[in-house]
Amino acid sequence: MTPRWYFDFISPYSYLQWRRLRDGLEEHGIEPVPILFAAILEALGNRGPAEIPGKREFAYRHILWRARRAHVPLRFPPAHPFNPLAALRLAIAAGNSRAAIDAVFDWIWAQGNAGDSVEALAPVLERLQLRPEALAAPEVKAALHANTSAAVAAGVFGVPTLALGDDLFWGDDAHDFAMAALQDPELLDDPEMRRLASLPVGIRRG
Image (cartoon, rainbow, N blue to C red; front, top):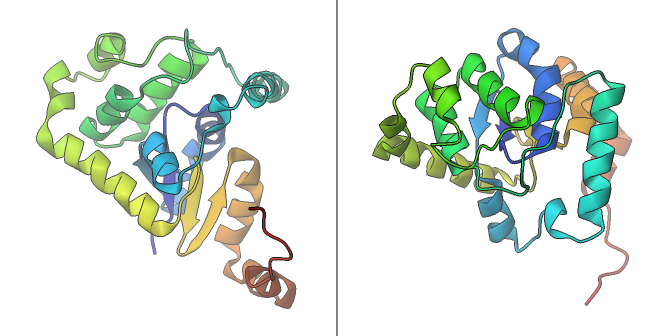
């Protein structure tokens, strides 16, 4: 099956992994799939990291520290979380090309600009030679909905997630693990890895 990389522009973790993943898209046959993370959270009844006081502030500082350590340009946009619908639809309208995804991530996360509206993304649209009305096309909206529904059906619970068949690798910090599994399909097939898939739950809260 084609490896699928589920992401949302709202996620700085998606940006960090994109910087590592983008050069190997064609080599590994990875398909980038824009999804609406908020819909994933709603389907699961969860809250995102930026919705939890304390965790939000820590996560932002940790992300910035990690980016600086990796020499990745990162500047947070004016507000976060923000509405990523326009950015996601832009990527889809541009054919989910590497250039389009790169341009949006760069605009929001490398330069620190707003990406929460068609107007805010106007320079990116111009760069990609897209008209604003392209983002409102019914087929673009339908594609984003279908992508997100497919992610829910696949069991995706966070972004970014690299899906290798039924196996999900969540988070940019799992990038090396995911690449190892991509190159060695038997990595998850040893006895201890298999045992973990059915490890009993010892206690449940509530």
